[in-house]
Image (cartoon, helix red, strand yellow):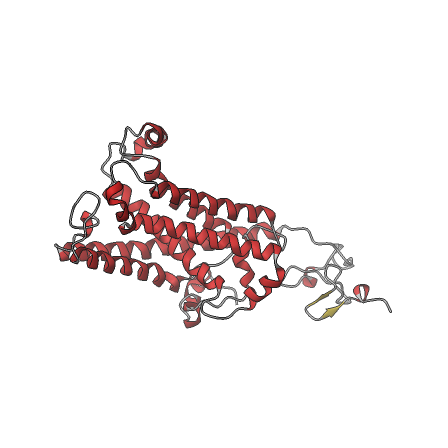
Amino acid sequence: RKMTKLQVIVHPVRKEFRRKRCGFDHDTPDDFVKSQWQTCTKSMAYLFYRWFMALFFIAVVVESMWPQADDESSYWLYFIYMTNWGIWMCMLTNLLGAILVTIWHYHPEYSDKLLNMQAWLSPFRIYWSMHIITLVLSIVITIIYWSILYDGKYSSIISAPKLLISCLLSSVANESALDATNVLTHGFNSICMFIDLWIVAHPLRLLHVFLPVVFGIVYAIFSYIYQMCGGINKKGKPYIYHVIDWSQPRSAFITVVGVLVLSCCIYALLFVFFKLRLFLSRSCRQGSFVLPTTSSKKSGKAVDDKEINQNGIQHSSSRISMVLGNYAGYENQAYAPSS
């Protein structure tokens, strides 16, 4: 029965709420070492991309940790800020992704073990979880910082070009509070991760929204314990962020809940982009060339449409594949070893 347009939209969403979708089982684990757009088993372009992203975020972390002259005495406070948690997550996620793709390319003896690993702590499941958290966290950090925390003179959307110019100049002259580190850790983080969403091949699942939510709750608990133990921020204030001041518990609690709701909304929107990525990928692959194997007397076409299976592989009327030697149980004698 043909589905209506509404059913076409609702059916994939309903499938996401099945219990098994809450787990981390995936039928094609090699999706975690491939791009959505590559057509071959291995891609040097994707390997280069993964290492470019990893090295970029390593450089950003080094830049963000470089001590400034005015805060050397409070350098350890670097680790209390969610921004720095986020940029470290970006670095670790992309570094793990680059390592997995490298193993897939150059060490097949290890890649087979990785693909067959079913343990909860398998590298692919760790990478999948980290990627989801990092994707949402980077966007949340960007939105919260530029809309609430940043109080500079270039905070309006109209001044975006001036903001970028100021960033590049202040990285040298340090004449503005808005420097390269600010833009790299509060802007480029989300841009890079959003681009990565469109390139990777592994999926998003709606029920995995609990991962960024749990991460947010962990940070909220940390900020509460830190403040109750007398911790201060770099400005000497008795809290980490003024929007999460636990001396005003009601306001802080509302802020935390609001950020968690924002995380869920962002994840739902990212899921839509993921589905759009799949749609575009399938649309591009539908026009791929397939070698004709026999002619059709009925239609005059090279191949009868009924002889194309759902995987896009064409078979002749004798059910012999001219594309693959053995596929779906069909044996091609042309590929049989000679006696």
